[in-house]
Image (cartoon, rainbow, N blue to C red; front, side, top):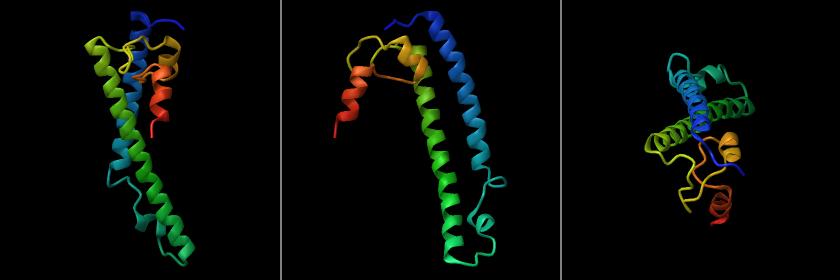
Length: 123
């Protein structure tokens, strides 16, 4: 496992900023009332309970995607804040370095793989 250096951080920062801009634009469009799919748009003239169920599912899926995008936006802002604070690449639990391989695969990681594994096993 390699430790992260300034060049890696700069490269990851650019990628995160680009992803953040993309997500913000996409989420803005998804939340725009004039572009947003409403239940009425999807259901049209619902003829069966099955059609109504499908229309509800489409709207629910749109809402879920917005939630996922907003969580990713929050994670990106938090990672960029850690870069600004000079603590990016340091595990928030144990204080050890987060490997460059982990950060390359998951740039918003705030824990090393060992601490993340323990975190996921907690009830």
